[in-house]
Length: 378
Image (cartoon, rainbow, N blue to C red; front, side, top):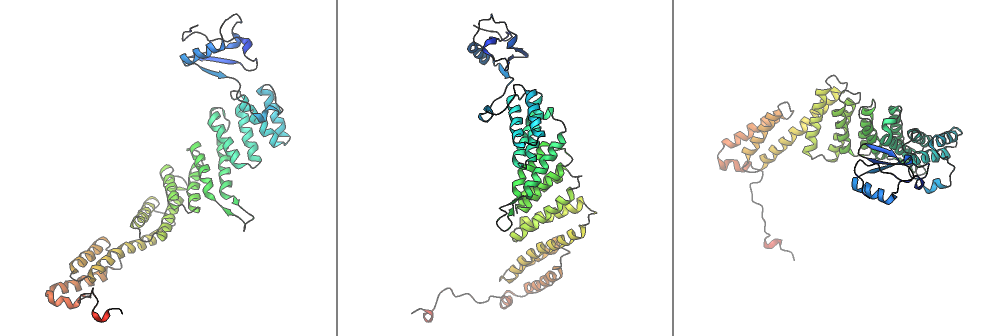
């Protein structure tokens, strides 16, 4: 038997349970199979084959059941199941109420009670201090029932509280008081930001991402998180603090890699951005002192290169070039007067005849690369 696209797909009512109405949908039409007469001669297999050919999808009122719920107390419809689970919750039987709410929105996911049951189960898990499970339950509520939720901000608030508790949690308390692992909270704060990027506490959540990474000594990740905060929420109360913490992370990296010119340049850049973005900050004097220190470090590196060439025989011209470069690039450096004096000395040496300069060189005798007979071992 062949059906066209607009033909109503039907099923004998005796083949379907009364409590589990089945729908066939093709295009824009949706017809309930219980309304079909019993005189129609068509099999379930024929309908399913036709559905595959016409790309018809099926919507079933009931969801899945689990082995756990098979022997549990339950009702035959979502309204009674909600009342049953709510009564259990009101009595303080949290574990039982958890299972009954779970059964409701799994068994009747399209019912009006499903969003309420999902929220109720998440609140029950929060009350039981099952932080990770509660966060997952709130996330399930957002993913599946965001359009039917009441008070979306309160869900984000709960997720934020869970992330803070995970960040502050001490593990292995019985060993010298335990330890904290704030890096485990990063994914939870990031989840809060994904769920509510325009939420009032979204800047704080983004700041906590950076703080967790910073406390875990993941400084590069922390710098990235703080930079995102400054880009997304430049007018928030956390923008200035995130810029300051970004500088602190770079200072930590400089201590770990003191010879890295890249980190030095990034630190100077971050201080420049800070002063231009927050010119009236209370930390302005501290930033200026830090910049002056970094300024001298960069000037000192060019000065050291010039001093190296000044010690090399027959390279006074190169030394003069680097001294002049230092004066040009860092005119406010404390080393400028010393550099000018050395330039004058080197120019006096250059004015001498070539043979007259040689005694002034630090190494006027060639290094013996071979041993004489007197130095032979034996």
